[in-house]
Length: 141
Image 1: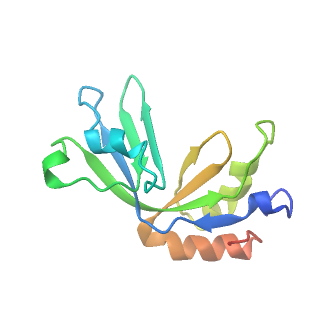
Image 2: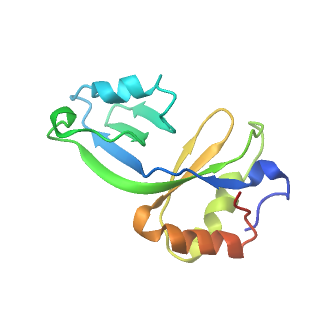
């Protein structure tokens, strides 16, 4: 599905760094480099979500071996930021954005913030994903 409108708030920009999605059991403390990354201006994205079942961390911060907990799981992604800002009552944006990717069987990970959405694509599939989105009239800036 194409963007809900041609407004530039729906244009996508590519974050230059590889994004990592880390998973930790809730029994593990959040590694200090992630905590420090929350206030580091060089960090492009750092989202920490803790639930009763897990801790998920989405960031461009790379842990060194000494900082890496033994139980940490990690995957690499390419991130696309919707320009935004978008009002909270806007409906269907993520659905429209992911529909062309569903059609070509590319899984996604989405992070939403107050102002916008970040679409994460597995690193190995990002070129195919960009082609599918462009074919569906999504604009990259």
